[in-house]
Each structure stands twice: as structure tokens, then as C-alpha cells.
Image: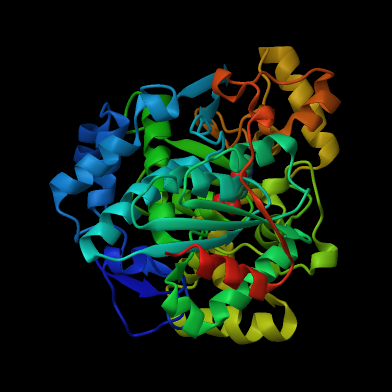
Length: 471
Ligand SMILES: *Cc1c(COP(=O)(O)O)cnc(C)c1O
């Protein structure tokens, strides 16, 4: 299996070559040359496999440069009951007939990003050891991504993490999750500024090619193909749990921001998993909902990007969306390059409403969408608690709200639960007048000693810190 760029670059690469990379050389995103097809016999064979074995089967179709025994060992080491809380790893919770939540957030940081990031940590350690190399991961976070990356990379050989975050702007729980890590290879850098300042610093450091090469700077953001392919597995696992036979179809609703999670659903569907609809649920930052309704993809300015109570979906553009558009336009790299390169930089938007391909988004690819607001979130959290005695988080509430707009008789709807409510306690209190339950391992974490360095908002200060901690 080889990988190509969505912007038409001629290079083809294998999995481990793109594992440690970000964008393709032409600024595109990597995708497999083709989607491996899973037939009925294979689906039947996979039904009933334990999660790590299922992960191995699916990943093997995309990874041909890690020996099978090693890949299997990596999958078994990653997806354990100890790390994810249950043997099922992603158990389904039935709400009512035909409506389920798939629990993706019982990993170390209580958000679905652990599902992919935990695998990435083990893949990085394996590949770096094989090459005899080191990697320094530099990132910016306002919460979920940074903590998932730190918990995935802590204690891993060959990897250091330098994670910037806006000083004093994360929730106390999120700060405690990250700053309480005492591992020597994890560095928390609180920046005197806002999240955009942190992102600007990461860009500035990465654009210093000499520094980047010298200090082996890398990233783990959501455009990484390995993260995406790891997420494909739980679409299969959810399907098997919600159905009895492979003749049945299911739909998924996905609380969406950067389009990484739902893009994995698209990949699963392209492989032949019987998915009827993929429902993209957004919050007030409705870049994706606007596209699926109108055909216009419009990047928002920072003034036009709202701070919401489902903050992990507060995006101004959807970084993985280019992958879907590439498929939608018949894999026309030149066209994608023109849209995401020239047209977006000149106009900040493009319009596919007149293209026949746009109609196919729903008809051929199953995509529909909806939007949820703060009031919807509160109402859905309350309603779910009253009816099912279940407290859901704010992102999952956005998903559930939108899922209810798309009922189809005979087609189970699976809403992906992307975080646990304890991470967003203030909104739960607003909705229910009570604190969400806290898993035992997080009792009292706010009181633990914190390991964090405060730096001014300045790329040079961050560079000096990295240089001083790379011995
Ligand atoms: C990251 C995140 C999302 C959005 O996922 P994308 O892959 O960016 O679409 C939704 N919910 C939670 C809790 C997240 O952490």
C-alpha cells in the first residue's frame, strides 16, 4: 500500500515514511492510493474479534512496512482493558431502540483522541527505535489534543513532548491532567497569551527549517494519517455491536471539528462497511454544516470563531476536510490544489454548489449534517439525564441533538461519545445543577504537584527552552 498527496504530487510513500511527517511536500494531506475492499466473507470473519485483533486486521491492510508479528504486538499492547477500562474497549450503550452511544472516551484522558494517540505513541517508539532516531514533538493545545499526546508519549523512548498552552485558560481539570505528569520527556509550556499565540509560536518554530532539522521537530496533529486510520477501527467495532448480520446497515453521528473523526468513518464506508449515513454534527462553529447544506466551504476569521461550551469543536477551518473533497472530486489533485491552495488563500472560501459532485456528498457518500447551540446542548444533557439517568458531555450532546434529526426506521443510529462530562463540568452544572461523576483515578488531581514552565509569548523563548532540554 502506498500513499499519495491530495494535491497531486508525484511521490508515493509507504506508511512508516509518512508516520512521522505532517503535510505532503506540496502542502496536501496523505491518503492511500486506494481503499482496500472488505467483502462479506471478511466482515463475517471479523465479527466477534476482540478489539486489538480487529485493529490488527484493519491496520494490516494499510501498513506493509511493519512485520505482522510486530504490528500485532503493538495493537495488543495499545488496546488493553487496563488502559481503556473495558475489554470491549469501545462498548455501545443503548439509549432506546435504534439509538446508541459508542463510548470512545474511557482512555487515559477521557476523550476519543486517546483511541488514536495511544497507538501513535507505540508506533512512534517502535519506528524511532528501528531508525535509531529521536523526535521532539512540538504542539499547541487548548485542552484535549495536548493531554492525549502527553499521555500517549509519556515515558516513550526517543520522544520528547513540548506542549504549549495559553496560560490560565484551560479548565482546572485539564490543567491538572497535563501539568501533573512528572515524566522527564514531557514538557508543559504555559504561554502568556491566547491559543492563537501558541499556534503562531509552533508555526514560527516549524518554519525555521534549520532549527527544525537540528532539533528534529515534529507534530502529532489531526492530519496525521496514522491517527486517522486508527479511528477507522471503532467504526467497524460499533457496527458489529449494533447489528446481528452483515446484511444490516447503521448510521453514525459524529461531533465534528477538524473532520478527523468523521473522515475515518468515510474511510470505513469506502472500504465497504455497511454505513448508511455519516452525520456531521457541529456546534456554533458551523463550517462543516454550512458546506453540507450549501456547497460553500468558508474558513472563518478568528473574530468569527466562537468560544463555546463544546470547545474541542471550536474550529475556524476543518483541517482534514481536504481528504473528503479529494474523493468527492474524483481524486483530482490539481483541482484540490487550486481550491485549497490558491482559492482559499485569495478568497477564504470556495463554492462547489454548482458541481454535480456536490450532490454526491449526500447521495453517494452518505454525508448529511446539523448544528447544535449552547441552548441545544443544555436541553439535550437535561433530557438525556431525565430519560436515561445518563450524564453526557457537551460534545456528545451536540451529536445526540443532531442525530435525532435523522431517524430512519430499521437503521440503528450510533452517536460517537467523544468525551466524558467531567472534562466540562461547568456546563454540566449549568444543565443539571450537579457535578458530573469523576472516575476514581482522577480524584483530587487538582491538588497534585504541577510541572509547568511559564514563558512569554515569543518563539525565541520556546526555541531556547527546547534547545536547553534536548540533551
Ligand atoms: C477533538 C474533539 C472533537 C472533534 O473531532 P475532529 O476529529 O476534530 O472532528 C469532538 N469532541 C471532542 C471531545 C474532541 O476532543
